[in-house]
Image 1 (tube, rainbow, N blue to C red):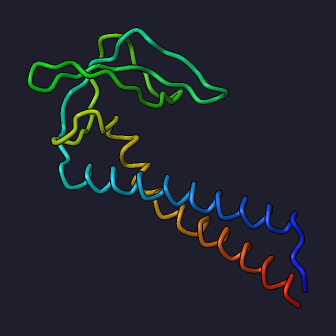
Image 2 (cartoon, rainbow, N blue to C red):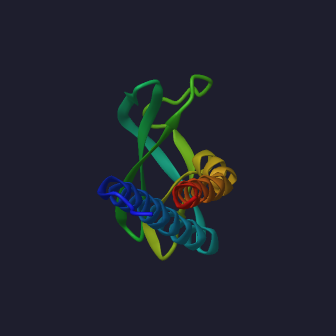
Length: 136
């Protein structure tokens, strides 16, 4: 059986998607593990930037580590009553303070990490199924 040029394009696309999502997963896992190992708590101060992307609302906060000020953002929930100047609990990586976030975002991200593995397995299985179906 001869494989058409469009099949090669489809295989290359599937491989590119698998590599792309694999890279994102590995990068996120490394950052997550580093944050888990070097977790440090601090207090952040809400600054005056509240914004929304589609239906999710966010806020900005600042915190300082060794005299250097870092600025990051977190999700804002309607049940929150945050005002500019309020202090919030944040976590950051002591070896890289740019990695981190609000404590609530950290907990929700940590709980949702295992979801990515089944997605990657599904992409690989769908690609394998497509290849094996073409051979018969």
